[in-house]
Image (tube, rainbow, N blue to C red):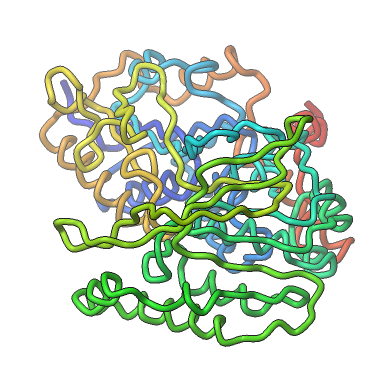
Length: 466
């Protein structure tokens, strides 16, 4: 077979997904000196950027600016975007194998983990991902409804997503009105009756998963007091020993911030955000109508594992918290893709450094790779995906050099475009997305906002005359 990766026979790569991991991988591939590569990116939604668009909180404008980098990648003439094309529905794995030398999966972790406690399915109990998708205008969650007439809300988890949910519930209508939050969410949150929000962590302040910038934001809310119980802000012996052993400056700063909140006194703001530690929900309590009215918590104590890391253990002390709305944010899972080896236990594609692995032979599957949360699990921030994707691309380049690639029968770009047009004639190109982007920004500026998002697929298509 003639060499691949030159002008006459460019390396054809399919990327499934369009979030940060996907774009970082595309960028690294396109920057390889002496390598001619053509990249086709497939996204089931009409819009690109994954969680940067649908997951990052609407008031975090700076984080969203990374899309400018991704748009530059997409402007490369050797890059194509196929939006509103779903893997496993509009295109199959066999289609990709017949048209590409390499396939990269970067589909994230779209499903949530459950708490596994009685009452979890009561009305008023939701996954945080639903709420986040709803206020960010994700088409899958446009029609969700949340009872914001409730005055007390509990969020289980202390990661960045949990903090985002808490902050959005505590922001004033004026603070929300200058963001790109979805219009339906802005209207609903502006009428919210929520007065008390609880963030619940099963371990101590030193083990909280949120980052320091996120927790700092909670101390600057215009109309919400942030409270930490003094006794829960103090480090226990196990946490103190672990922190001294690691000498982690970021964690030390995090504890310092939280202990600073514990010294604050309420100032009489209309809302109150309380961050709790060393508590775990053991049951959601419902009324006769099947709605959440409370939560039973167990107090935890930390014990050192064999590795010396603090692990929570339930005590015999319990308390009840009166709440009418619960969001769980206890972790996320990747979803299996048709025909792609999947580790059910970890919720990721079975892989080694990004090479997809056959579960029976334990050998790499030729030509298939993964990157991002579907590769390593839902850890890190947006920037974490860059070195992760570079690691995967390095494997792809090594395999190319060894000739360990797929041998597609129809590698021509035009052939794949014909197939997509046949299976999904309403697909969107990146130029189509730029038109939608321009409309959103224009409509948003007219309202004094960064953008006014389309939140329904049919509205996006209509705006493009489809």
